[in-house]
Length: 127
Image (cartoon, rainbow, N blue to C red; front, side):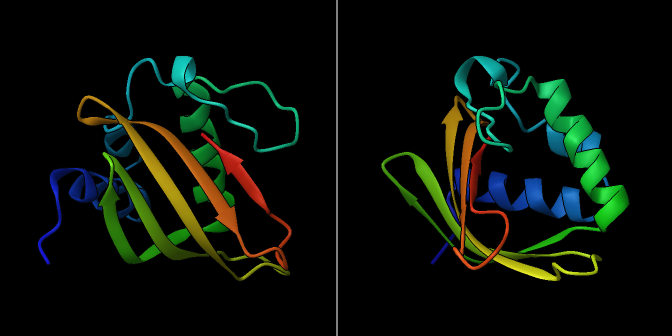
């Protein structure tokens, strides 16, 4: 099955993050990201701006050497649903499987909701 344009955008976003090309990856995020997102990385945290999301990704990439592998992606009603795993260079968390839903504003990623296995420390968060 051929990937749709939105699926290709999500794959490109993660490919760029994996390569450390964070600025290029964040060009794929909508400018008004904070107006359309709820970034609750910590329970009750306020929504994050696009700049704050970039800063967060810079820290994750530098400190944890995070890499994401997408094992399945499909477009459903205009959103992209992804199943994959993130791997980390961390003492206690090495791999976290996840399911993520990407919503779009035009051709850019406008909102992402991640869910992980309940056995992992990171349960869910949204960007």
